[in-house]
Length: 121
Image (tube, helix red, strand yellow):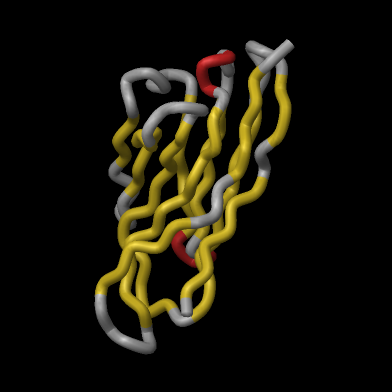
């Protein structure tokens, strides 16, 4: 069993900053790519940023230059530093981890339950 848990969401004013964290734990053999996705009210889930085990990153155009993704491989943890936040960044942010379960030795995609980020004055 693998658990993915996000933390760090909340309410912030426009122009402010927040840092999200996500840790994968449990029966993990290895974690490859990790990433952040978000879903705004009434919209579908969209990619925010991803990072491979070798620190190759990919960002949505809407967050480039404002958000930074990073990870700690030893802790199976990924972070999302969000600066210059805008009201349109308001969404539930989901963490995704692609890895191999040590109990089944098969590749799986694991999702967290989400963390709400609200950008409002």
